[in-house]
Image (cartoon, rainbow, N blue to C red; front, side):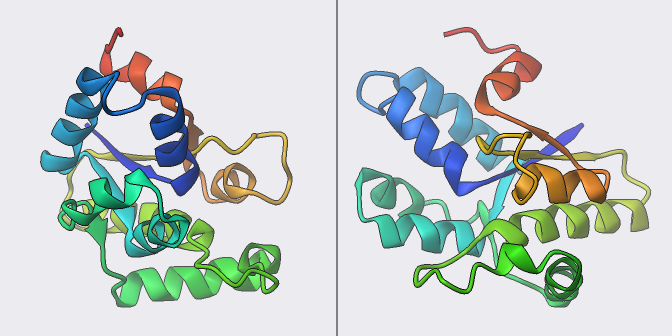
Length: 161
């Protein structure tokens, strides 16, 4: 089974490409993944969206079950990530920065699942280019975490819209 960790870029991309009013079936499928615990995100993703102030804010308000509050393991993972990849800290940004938290959540989920001998594969969903050497896909690749975009998520889940 897959556990998907979604980045802010993908939620924004989803909103822009598949508006909720025009594409309710897409959002129903996303909601189903969230309710089943197959699609999660760090709390920082919610904070980034709330800082944006558009209609996506109302969608995330009712999805507290989807957003994971940082725990000790995630905090340790973020520290490790930022020590190795300080460019992810983005000190020039004033708004929340979820990037290291997305990767840390994937690492923590993978570690937690191994502790309980569960067969889960953690995959990050992001619209960031894999060609960038300073983004989520490059750092996730270092840790052996696969990154896919929304279209690949649709394929893997067998969705056709």
